[in-house]
Image (cartoon, rainbow, N blue to C red):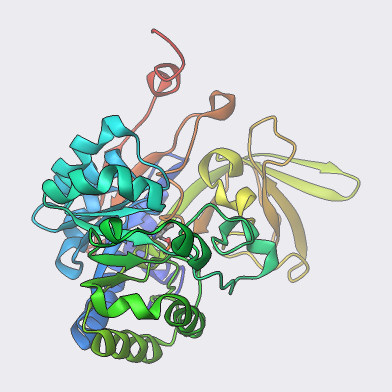
Amino acid sequence: MAGVFDRLGEAAVAKALQELQTPCYVLDEKVLKENGQVLSDVQEHTGCRILLAQKAFSNYDLYPALAPYLAGTEASGVFEARLGREEMPDKEVHVFCTAYRAKDMEAIFNYADHVVFNSISQLAVFGPAAKSAGMSIGLRINPECSTQEESHSIYDPCATGSRLGVTRAQWDKLMTEGVYSLLDGLHFHTLCEQDAYDLETTLNAVVEKFGQFLPDMKWLNMGGGHHITRNGYDVARLEKIVKETADKYDLQVYLEPGEACALNAGYLITTVLDVTENNGIKNVIIDASAACHMPDVIEMPYRPPLYGAGEAGEKAFPVRIGGPTCLAGDVVGNYSFDKMPQIGDRLIFGDMAIYTTCKNNTFNGTPLPDIHVLHPDSTTTLVARFGYQDFKYRLGSS
Ligand SMILES: *Cc1c(COP(=O)(O)O)cnc(C)c1O
């Protein structure tokens, strides 16, 4: 499993990246395949099937690189389902949507093979048509078992009052025999960047609340948030849990990680535009924006790894790095360097393949970064470049 910046130590890679116009994302095909191999091994050892959750990573130029290692894709709605069908064809397409729109269902049935509903009411409304269309049908359950830190409550589907998944109380109140008979599988998604121990805790809650239904099911989808490709993740533990569950209930287990598929498989290369000082704080302003190009830095929040930089107080030159927009909070984070960054220097952020390109925006009319692929042989290919039209067309009649 790769460290964040392992490949940047290779001279040929450093040279290739030095020549790219900034800001740009660089997607690392080699790291992606290494992640794929880890996931492929888990499938081989356990018999589970692993899907790419496209909401985390949907740079389809790289789907052919990942496809050999995966069983298919997972989609959050009709567009991602279509993308999965088009760009990773001949593989499974699963859809989970918190609430489906009636007008999308026909298209979804066209692209998908597994459809997961978030409520018994939606299952009752769309389930019969889904069954006629040949879909394998699932229901998302909510085991009401929070395993995440409270500071991450935005990512906790088990938080009190959550709209995600059916609780046992809702199930007992609303489930009918007719609706139940539509079900092929159950789905839960409760984790975010977590290890196998939290899955185990969650699974105990699932079994306690919904275990009686598992023998009737063909499959159980354990969602995403499994940080399987992170250094130190307890893969053996995951494999044990998955295999035991599959054997005990005689069902197919699915996992649908997003992050783990593309963890550390991308960089955001930026250039320093200005350096200012306010009350002793050195503000380094770069040509990429936290708000536009790494939105999870603000939403989650987290501080992304930066090549060559230390923790805030670690090295001689402390700086605060921010973007070019007018948002006061468009700050990437506090770092420190051995020497003060200068205008024109390049700063390279790591782990930038996930929740970035598929989530970025043009707030402030900020241009979207180019997207390149870095191949295993250290060459790069430009796969997307954006301009004024990409900003304008979403705003009006052009
Ligand atoms: C977000 C999400 C995933 C992927 O989560 P990661 O944290 O990226 O692994 C999988 N399934 C569902 C239903 C999700 O909402």
